[in-house]
Image (cartoon, rainbow, N blue to C red):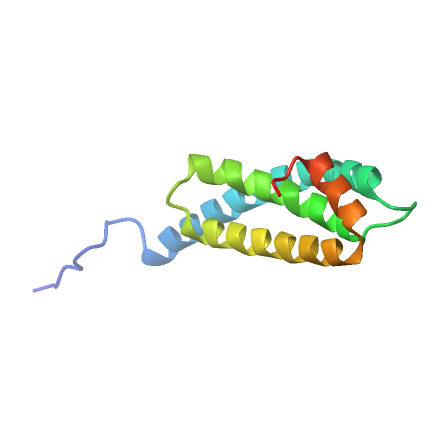
Length: 125
């Protein structure tokens, strides 16, 4: 008497199912990365040009806060569609905290620059 394998469909092996699943995951990931990367690069260049203190400036507090604000807006839009995405929610909170730290630094450094940046980005405070 031959024992039957329980839980497996005839004609497909477990290996082929896992390969199919991994191929589907790879396709989804690359499409998402491509879309976010192309949009992000163009927006990033515009923001850097707009908020740079001098030509070639990419690290000033103004540029960093503007880039983080863009990221916060994108994550907020994502979370409005996906309320149960707790991993992205945690990432959003980390980005908000980082922006707050940079803004506090800028406030200590130069209050006028801080106020101009807050007005430009329409942030509260």
